[in-house]
View 1: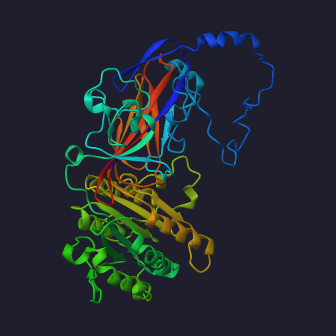
View 2 (view 1 turned 135 degrees about the vertical axis):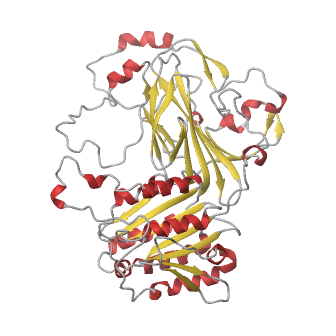
View 3 (view 1 turned 90 degrees about the horizontal axis):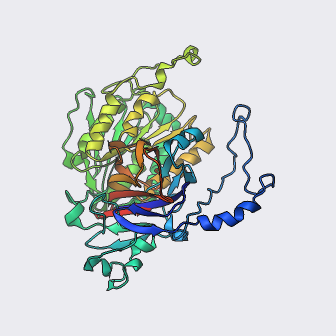
Length: 513
């Protein structure tokens, strides 16, 4: 599936120009004649309700107000001053309300020119269109959008895919909506059949994990959400428990759960994948029975160690040919098996100029993440408790696989009910929210702008494209832009597009303009 979005931003110069975006031409009229008569009425000493207060950043410790601020209103020149022309600011927003006219002006203002992109956000109104042809520019590959004017059109442009009728091309949904979702034609975007929704849960069952009580909450929330997991009748699920050993489970309808224990966590010999992965629809009663018994199964465990790196590796091997999501729960430092770590925590070095434990101690988790990304597998990490876990090293497997880290300090189901409820709420949202697989996000910009760098959890494929193994409504990304040349247009255009597979087995595009 594909999703595209775009944004229009005013730029400082005003002139009579022919603006070119997406290979299509349209004229812009100059508002300079309307400005000149008002120049004599300006009073620089008058107080304005929109006047910005001066803030001394050296003296003010908390310059950002605690309350939520409304984004500034971007006023576009005609003919772009319509509400539909720019995307929702919560989906795509620029750091500046006006783009500087030259690199020198941008340097003088000492503010970053960038974007915040929320590409999979839940929107109340998102037009969805199924069509065999998605109209794009042949040269720059930008999607048709509200900022273009038709000049010389082929016959197929007069067909409206939303209404199924032939008529005025300006009534096409791409022209009438700044954000739109297409069901992508399979012959153009499908390299392989869309992957099924695949969820593997990797559970820390060490002594500290059992004492924290998180297994009970995990059981309760997953039981509530089991029939609400995003997916269809192809949804696959699996479980791995880890302490000093790896515990795999075979769950089949009308049969008792079978447990396979692997003791050699340095050189893992995997049981057959056909035993460990199962369709949720066919085994849901067996899964519910397994979850009901899960806390009691490890209630007497006194093993303090955790082979987390080996467990994530095993999860990767399980679904390497499918893709999907690994959900990892961690309470202690991985101190045995592949990716084992030693404590680097030293309170005496916290004030040192170079704090070594703020950087990764090993490349194991980063290399594992790159393998996961290649196979379209995302890793999400829930860290529970105040035990030292060397998060700066372990989180590499999350960062480079487009996953997320959830941290609950001082977690204890009995003594800290606030953290317990936060974990319960976050886990419920995590399990039920929509999800996209095999996603690729690309940013397209007007002439004079280019992408400098991306910020977030993903793998950068090229200068303007990021690879997202999974994408969800809570994911957001930062993009820093370069101003390569002077801007001589009244507006600049920014288009973000996401190509992904739905959990129901379709390819889609979403774009934001």
